[in-house]
Length: 344
Image (cartoon, one colour):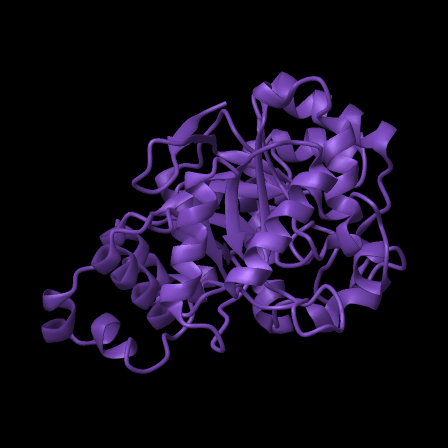
């Protein structure tokens, strides 16, 4: 397993990390993802650790906290061998203190996560969304206090817009607060919007990407192809409305190239899609999920080999999309491109 520094921090993380969204299995969304219990989770954690995957990602909204509880049971007795990442900000109840990132909410949410996880510290706490109703200064001061108290060690964001992340970094610098070192983002061959603004920001500011849904919400598994119906067992029947939008024709074109590369390499479509991400700038770790041991072992096979330059170029070309304004001139016009060369 390869390890990389998380952004500009000294925290070293594996290039593959494990997403515990399938743990617990409560509610219409997370129930469709999976319902891994504590015993099954412990087995998946065993396999991860054997492969060198020691970063486990969860959130307080995953199955109403059950994901954190199951993960806590699965890592019991080996806390020092793992890194725990969890997230907070999204609503976990109907009360006025049950959502957002106010000082009161962050303290209460962190203490709740520690209790469910059965630990006294969280390695990486990420804000699951930007809270426009709370001053950034209050958010960062609260996180600074939680770090000073030893309850969390590093902080990150998730699903922030570019200006939201940059404002947070500027406020942190102005007031000497800890900076976000990670940004958990959606990024895949079928969804490359991360590249327009957030990737250059991450490269410039030392914020590492933790990639969620590298298989485009289950669309890059190799089971969805042009002219064929959606498989009966696909979770997309129940969850498509929750995930990132994907143009079907674009998806089919991408899968056809993935199929060709799979034939050339002897790897699977998901392994190729994940391996492509590992070569992208600013990516610190790609979060993989699995409902069972077979899926996990297949995803773990995404590392330890490399795509050829020609294969990468074909995948780049078929998945390329027109950048929105104001980004498209920098990709189409020589004068603009000279001022801002692409990140490589």
